[in-house]
Length: 288
Image (cartoon, rainbow, N blue to C red; front, top):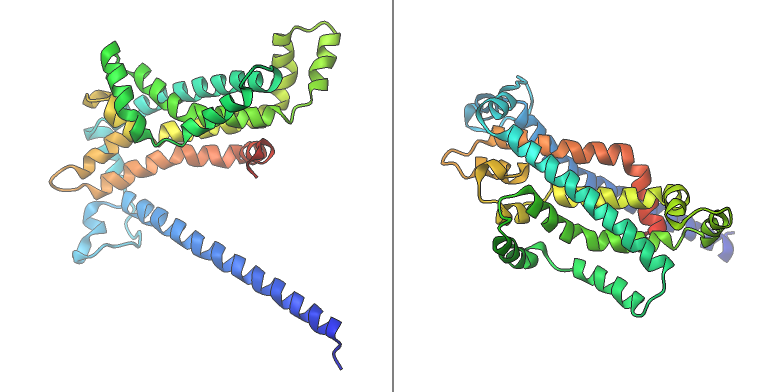
């Protein structure tokens, strides 16, 4: 004889089992839809076009791996220059956005002034605008100042996109840093700058590393701003340069997939080695 409590227990266990199965199936589907495009990209990148399209069909089994596509990229195109342009702009935007975020986030947390909360929320609200909305006004500003086709202009444009969210993230994170730590340093005679440098910043490391990763992702993956601000081929970033392979009469799928693989490597390495800080920063910063 099964009591009602027993039936309830069985029902509860069954429900938990079904929920677990649903989670696994969802994770499996997401993994499949994520892995398949990456697999196709890698396979086409490491095969010559003759092997990939042999027999009038796309061969997705890497039977004859080749570096032909990468040799074409580095030997016959400006991929290296595009890559360097992206590194310069991305590193500049990342450092600038993170610096602004740390300074503004600390100020919003530790100093009282009229409209502080409104200002912080206005900063976050400005992040809601699509980059294409900002592209034309920024183009007009840079054109007036004579800054078009410069790394400096693109760095400022990308900072304008990523800085609002980074500021909001650091504002949230600095609220988790106890003021008692600073007061203890002040009692020992430390200045505010030294307190921030030696006490606050080490504690807030996950927060500003998360902000830096976000700023890096925005700048590295940007296409819109680079296409608007830059009009000279030698100033293009890697994302814009990669699109040039699709503009030709005969689309270079091998070269396109090879450069796409190169574009994917830096974000992958950053996510691999800094994911601990990323998770800590986003969870403690109020985004869990």
